[in-house]
Picture (tube, rainbow, N blue to C red):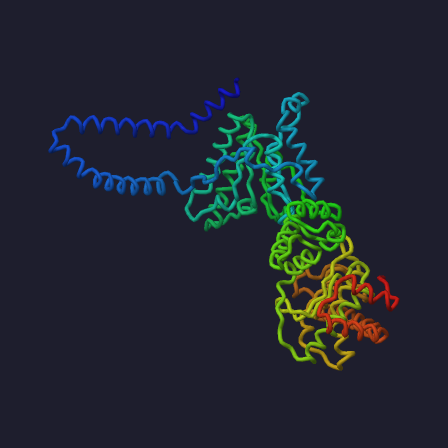
Length: 536
């Protein structure tokens, strides 16, 4: 009953101005009708004839006045456009948040704190004020925030940090004040409220201070946010402020991260193999699909994909199946969707037979080195159909997640990059300009190995990129660059020995690619088994 009365008070506090305006308009209409009825017919007709023009002029004058007043005196442009979203309207439950199980556990604790703060106060615990959700784009930070509001059963006020910033001075702080004022009203009426600020790095970056006032508006907005969050502690408002960012923590101002503000962080990482399986199963249930699809294989093929990426893959597969006039999605459509998203749409280019054969040879060079020498990656597809700027491609992914790369893996990546160049040289005695992106990748890896990771042969340890260039002697620079070149030369020699030894296999794959244009994983695996080859 007490909560019902508070909700009634909240309704009147939110809408009393509208109620007064409606009452005033009705009263004026009644008085106007009563006044017209008391006039003589001649004056009544004149009044009625000029009434539309008077209303139009009054409306124009009032609009101009309100615009000028709100824009320049009351900060009308800072009005919050977002409205209250009831938890029932969000409809995001824990079961909808998939692939981020550790983050969900921490979020569940937040829900318990919102529901039962009395128990926390009894033991002298600190009430949670701010929660920062940190993770790559598309990992479900916004979804998790909505799930917290739904499970807690309280109002949810979302706002993007970019909405606070405007070219007009004072608009940002005003919007922050209005947001927290609205949140306090909802917290009073419903017992609690969640504020969610998406992409908080737009206003939460390290503040800049200069005599010329650079970054003044952003600084003011952030200062107002800090003040409002401190005000929650003083007034003991049952308000939780959630914020999301995909920027590194060093980008955010330390004042935001200190105790009492966003001092608690939830890290949301890319889903692992098990998480990706669950995501595929979840999103496939929303469409009609072939029950024989190997979901575990799809999960292995989508290493480093975010939940948003997987959802997009299933949606794209549905579009492709519709285009092919199929009733269900098959493995072929999902594979094509992954390739289309990663590499672009297929477009056939007219090439001479010689050029086509050289492209096939180039891709087979990558394929053989990848399959035989790479310790962590699998080849899933080889193609000589053009996509974007590439005339062909070898599609590969790690067999499992790798957070770090050791020297052997980095050397294998260099070898795979150089495989196309060496294959062209062995078969045709010449090379093409298609190797430019491969060389760029290989040289960057070799350069980082020597300059940054201490993986050269001459014992130079440390990260030389942190030293100002004018403080490194020319002899040291030349030696480091020479070591990087030695790595590339040594990798190229090893690849050349391998491809000369496996010349028959090279020719077989070139022939298969020229005939079929694309080779799937099963076809590639079958040919290697035919020649008695297995992964390293």
